[in-house]
Image (cartoon, rainbow, N blue to C red; front, top):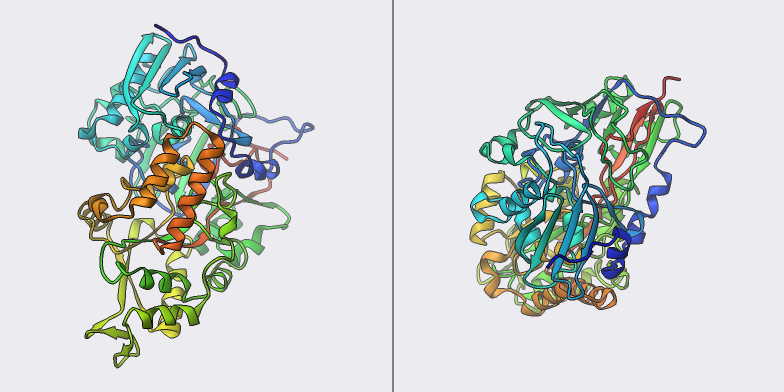
Length: 548
């Protein structure tokens, strides 16, 4: 029997998990004032730090890819300010009292870029395709609680859950579950390469891509289904968007200064002064709550990290705050948890509760038996050096994060005689390590998601440690699993906070800094903003160029 459909507002009342703090910064992001009238036309060039490894949102796990993908991919539901969920491709939805049935009523007359219709069958095809393990889609983890996707009518689709999932609407709002034409999904594995074959429903159509250089997009003239938080409902103002891949900081800053591009992200701390408060430019800072903080995730099933004293010494043996300030010059905040500080579920009580205790860290290592030194001054035990490797996948390196780790490396050597090795690895090597569970320390920010899902993906039993989860921390796993199944906002918040404390206390994570996106742009670029669900730059649907 079909569930009665209610408005998105009523559905949100049935499953309200407010994340208001993360959205507070959206008030200052350069939207057009009432006195300004947006104009259509023109083209814009956007300089970004990294070239996406994959343009398919279902497969991509690269945070920086989403600022490109969001321009051609829409979601069923949008996340607005205050943590509210708003209509997008679904105009209404309802949630059953037991939290195990979700029904979505679709907007009519929505078309994919290849001309095919977005209907309930297309939504079912997408979600079933993502859930099918044969298709190796990373986004499948977001639908683990879903047992069946049912077509109720051409405009209504229903998700049946095996268990309540407190983060499902957050997942549905994610770009990772954005909708792609079934025709495109059936075409094979080439969608990662981008191009016109990757047909979404977004405000821009993928025109072409040249690896290492640029990707271009043209206006979707038929677009009439913008998300509930958009500044206008119709087609994009811009005629064309070009994304240029400029990995060097100086090159990006120079390209903006000289007018070769109109907007850049990933502004070097030393370059902020070139644009902030300068005539002809604008500088915008996004919130830090959707993605996790940049964190060292420790594989505590491999010696010497099996000893909690070694992990706590790693956590406390350096002045992380001073390192972050040195590298980022006050543009990033020092982290205390892997959950971002602007997230409603952030455990603020962790602040100043750990770290920068060199004396205590040395005492812990003495107690653990690492009492002798080798010729280079590193601690040893039974002839073995105290050493743990940080394996950093080359495709994910950005924002001077490797420089920060090198600073930590130097402090741990000086303060403790602890050999923290840093090795740059390929994406393929990381995938093999993940599959076997033999990685040692993985430095990362995790994909924006519900806070409990972020913990699951990072440090839960199905996260990075999944291959050796039988040796994992069962208390931590239990807290995360209970948070995912919670139907109480207050109960879930406590569970997530307890999980953060457990992870920090056990030295399973060493949070370093809270990442946020920073944009610099020409003053004539109007309508720039940040998407609440991602904390990253919004798509360019609302962006326009002031002729003055």
